[in-house]
Length: 398
Image (tube, rainbow, N blue to C red; front, side):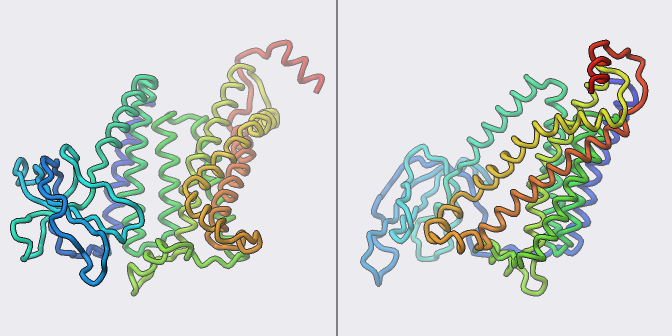
């Protein structure tokens, strides 16, 4: 790595860390506390050691004849200041629950919280959840190891860019939204930051990266404009499901703009695919110019359009399938209860999913000519590499 490349890389890392640090400060400038005190106390990780009584208490609802079950068990705390201590806890099996619940067994890793019931005799804790994150951490570690093995230096850069991307979303964008920030400006700034940071860390500063940055940023902004224009014609409310309703009621004095949430979801969901298209196209044209030699701006742009046609089909499918997969349960439910296509496709829940896929795909389509034009402008000019005879002959025939 050259001195200039090292300097750009180091500067990108420093500025990225500064963005997350100061962005978090700005996002939390007017911090709103949404936490609720349910009297559950601090949660602890624990491991079940023994099931003492599977019928510790017979019913949860005295007025109803229901086969409820309360299980008394022992568990060893594996976190917190009481780590290593063996305590008694209960698990509630509610017959009103939609599906059959799994009962605790010795060896299960769980999460418990302090029992606040004064009449609970010697029961100190209550079952909250199974501790599920361990396996996800296992998969993440394996992913990182394989990325480093196969990617080597690029694998390290990929992990660094992923960390900054996650940090910008969870430490800057989400706090800004929850604390009443302008969702449109925060979502656009987050996307632009992700684009510039990722491309500079992965590919360094070059004409190839610059072309990808400009093309990708233009495509994301185009997707955002399309979303805003569409909203004017389809009269969106943003209230697509019960989750959005809960989000609306988080802050009654300054409600979160649900239509802005749709806007943010679309451009954040599309930025990855659009960045992939712009970088693939820019890299392909850079390699073409390097191998062929002298090419005019028009020739480079035309070549970019040819390459882009092959890219856009799979990328459009990627976005549409990703959005359908993420909302498959809702799609199945609405389809089951709305056999009439007129009602189904005019439902706001379905319409928003379609809008996400279409706006993102249109962003990709617009990224292709924009990136090709930028590459034509940046890569044009004479080259010291001679043009092969067969290429000259082909250009003459065309």
